[in-house]
Length: 254
Picture 1: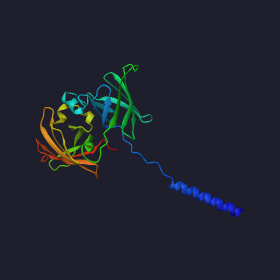
Picture 2: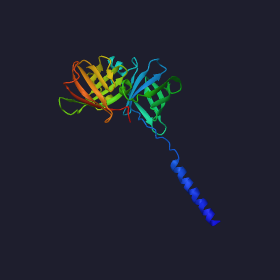
Picture 3: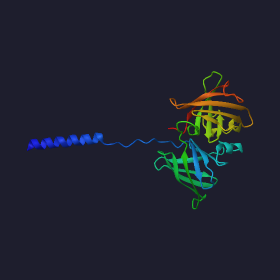
Picture 4: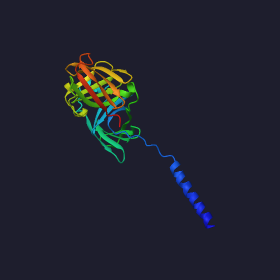
């Protein structure tokens, strides 16, 4: 009898271990930080708007829905950005814009902002709603490039070391130069606005842009899946080369 009980105990132990090792494990979901470019839907307008989150600052593109258009009519990335707070424990976002209080919930696993409400200045009346989705680049084409890219440019054969960031929206491209953080750049003459719709071919983007009150340049960059960076060249006028090189790291990936 003791021998039988011992065999049963061993069998149960083996079965238990086997079941543990064969049990399916929960998939590890990616997490996306609350930074980069978001496509927003607000009840203020039927048009999508783009919000740029960076280092606890937020810039809202509410002129025709794009940051490009906002800058074209005179907005300033530094002066017109607002502060936002994010609670990592509750995933709650809060900020004040146009004298109203905006509150929402961020989902790190989906890149969505949900349950957004806009309240009056005293917080007593709900006046609008909003939701959003982070641009999460796909394999190629427009959906690869839309987002916020931070990097550097170099002149001639020099290694890129001068700050050079781009915001790529559907049909628009914004350049900011000589500031490490896009929303710390308060000098409009350092803002470059695309003069044409960026041409996107698979993993390559080409665009002509002009600094406000300044010169026109062009750039061409290709996404490198190995480094997960945009790498390319820039030049004067409509020339996409001859000036030097550029390299950008994505802010919409994690």
